[in-house]
Amino acid sequence: MVITASSSTILIGEEGVEIHRPSEESTPTHSHRRRWSTPIESGVESLDERLTFRSLTDHDGVEQRGADDFYLGGEISAWGPFGPPLLKESRPVAPPQMPLPKRTEAVVELRRGRSVTRKRDLPPYLTTLDCNGRPRFHHRRVRSEGRLEIASVAVSIPEIVSVRGREGLRIGTEAENFSLVLPNKLMEEEELGKAATPRAKKDVAPGRVVDTYAAQCDACHKWRVIGSQEEYEDIRSRVLEDPFTCDKKKQVSCEDPADLDYDSSRTWVIDKPGIPKTPKGFKRSLVLRKDYSKMDTYYITPAGKKLRSRNEVASFIETNPEFKDAPLGDFAFTVPKVMEDTCPPDAKLASPIPTTDDVSEKSIKPKPFKG
DNA sequence: GCCACCGGTGGC
DNA sequence: GCCACCGGTGGC
Image 1 (cartoon, helix red, strand yellow):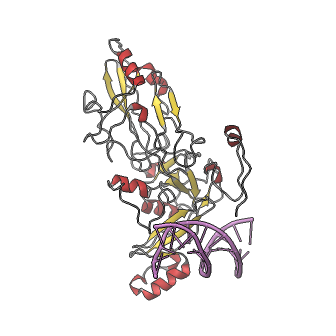
Image 2 (tube, rainbow, N blue to C red):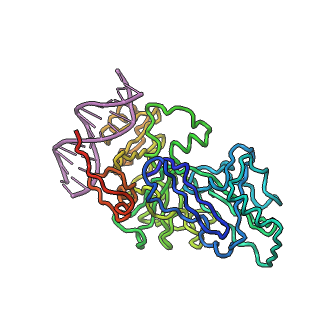
Image 3 (cartoon, rainbow, N blue to C red):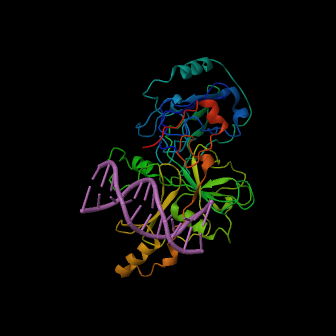
């Protein structure tokens, strides 16, 4: 589970080759096991050597990053919630204030003066989604001096916890068809421009709350990001009788690339199907323990009080009769299963099973005894 | 003093 | 063995 891995980058080079630059100093955890998904999932060949990176500004010139800052993982677009401008402009928007990285400059220079003509249609629109379901980068359908341009989006990597239904079934099987993701505290704060606000004592540590909700399509098994916890809970509560499919998302079909892949770039937790929707006025909160051993479920009352068990809920309702309409049965403290194979290698699980990667990538040191 | 977090356990 | 539940406590 990663909170932020702000310095990891992916750069699309001259030949459309993906260059990974894993951070040395990234915050906890997945760094060496993170498997980045390529931002160009199917169109890389068709983009071929005309693919060039450009660094672009957002509309307000607020956030600017060089091409080297481009990386995936799902936070907010440098263009704000609606992504970069597309198709409307004949040339990239304002030049970047930050100097382009040397490598990119060289690429741009190389292209200049080369006359390239090609009648072929522009490649299909490329994008991947952040955990809000918004595009993380865009392929601009702009040809400039023979180049097609990719608008890069710098994002940080919030912790993403996914939840799916159908307990006990494995990814890729017919019935294992649903997982979910939500924006985490950190992201919400940044979106609201309050990142500098110190976290209130009561707040759960960012990065250990559910960040992204996703559901797996019953037909094609691709994972679809679900935009809100409420929507997720709605799907989850009915998934047994009404399986989730891609077409339940607006303007999405099984033909579209998956929003998310099940891999260790995020910590996944698997929810049980059929858990009732959270009663109105309450919020259901899942918190991952630091050692990744399990999650804890809380219901948060409208006044912000945390309820830790059904008994606490019962006594709360008893002393607050205005909530007597909330059925006790709709409070479920069932916790999702933490998928160990998606936990960071250094997570202190009760019985860690080192993977081959772990062994090959770092030497094994004897564990110091505690206390 | 409060509360986020964790550990332990009883019941299934 | 799992998990719902809750007591304890360390840090703020």
